[in-house]
Amino acid sequence: MTDNVTIIKLTAAETAAKIASGELTAVEVTEAHLARIEAVDEKVHAFLHVDREGALAQARAVDEKRAKGEKLGPLAGVPLALKDIFTTEGIPTTVGSKILEGWIPPYDATVTKKLKAADVVILGKTNMDEFAMGSSTENSAYGPTGNPWDLTKIPGGSGGGSSAALASFQAPLAIGTDTGGSIRQPAAVTGTVGVKPTYGAVSRYGMVAFSSSLDQGGPCARTVLDAALLHEVIAGHDPLDSTSIDAPVPPVVEAARNGSVAGMRVGVVKQFRGEGYQAGVIQRFDESVALLKELGAEIVELDCPSFDLALSAYYLIAPSECSSNLARFDGLRYGLRTGDDGTHSAEEVTSLTREAGFGPEVKRRIMLGTYALSSGYYDAYYGSAQKVRTLITRDFEKSFEQVDVIVSPTTPTTAFPIGERADDPMAMYLADLCTIPTNLAGNAAMSLPCGLAPEDNLPVGLQIIAPALKDDRLYKVGAAVEAAFVERWGHPLIEEAPSL
Image 1 (tube, rainbow, N blue to C red):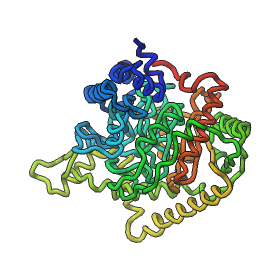
Image 2: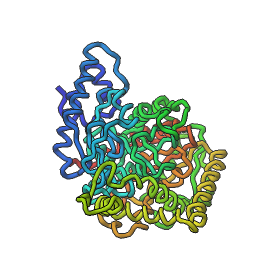
Image 3: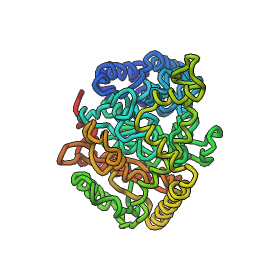
Image 4: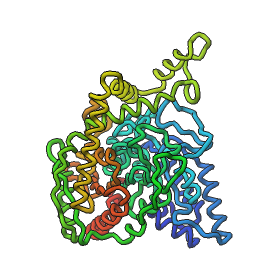
């Protein structure tokens, strides 16, 4: 019998292989992770809801399939932590907000359906910044999540619950969403792998909308191969999502199994460094670039001047779209309802509900977006931001005529202390400086660990960016870099994370 500590340290690929061979049962694996959640999540607070009975029922179904000789999928029986932005039939979905506290959806998101169809065991729903608005998971209405490397530090955001669940070995797989970096930035600061697929590659049906032209679900894992296996499960065309791309899923698993950068042209953008970047982050990034060259890549310097405007454009476009999307939360149709005592009009109930249900950051962005879209200001603000978005897309297009992928630091700094930027929105927004251009252009991007910053011994992320629908390039390069790191240091970086 394999002990729980050994089980939770397995990769998703290893776990699936052991379940398929009968060396482990899906129930054993699920129970080991549920025990880990029970042991450490009081400190980490990665989960908002743990579906113990549901997870064990899914695991038993996998074991029954195997006993009958039925073919199991590549991730059958592997546990997963699901960001609480995806609807789950019969299980609460709060989006980290009081306005949906206690809401139980009557349907599954497409991503949820795909996970269940692949026999992935959903352990529960993870903590997040309210409506995915934030870079630290401090904006959750249910309290912050801690970074397993140092519980006084943030685990990134908005998907800090998912990244923390991985880094604390509460789950080998997780799902996040990325509007301006909310998969990649948490991956970077927790020493894990996070991928933002090409916009439209993963269905948004049943994913509660923040900014519809930017939001994208994606895989989170502790290794590049595990992320690729999960990517293949959740990606694909969905007729229920009007923005879904009707195109084949790129061969991401094959790329992850055959990582190489030999002969590839790798771009380094000069705008992704300078003032505000931590010295240790730049040091590890420069070492990664040197490693890529050593592995056979050609390094090409790129100039993308419009990237300097990306942060400003994003914080006009995203709030504008959020102000429209969040109008549906009116206290009348579902979720929280305040003031419905017979003395208030429908408009007053809506106002009181929003006042009580939305947190400060959500209110700030709704107000910014409403102002940017208002008569007389639309062209000056929202219209101008969309023009900048076009310039950023063109800079990427020109760059990808010269290179196969682009690399950069994922974040300018390592994980910062919880509370340090809570009262300084601009400092918080700067955490997404390197990730936002990709969302505006719709390209694919990955963050993977590239070492620890010498000044604080916290993880640093390397970002890899590929053209739209070329997601397999992320895995090809990421797997090569990961293998070189493992060979050099003898183990994955995540093994250095402190035990809880």
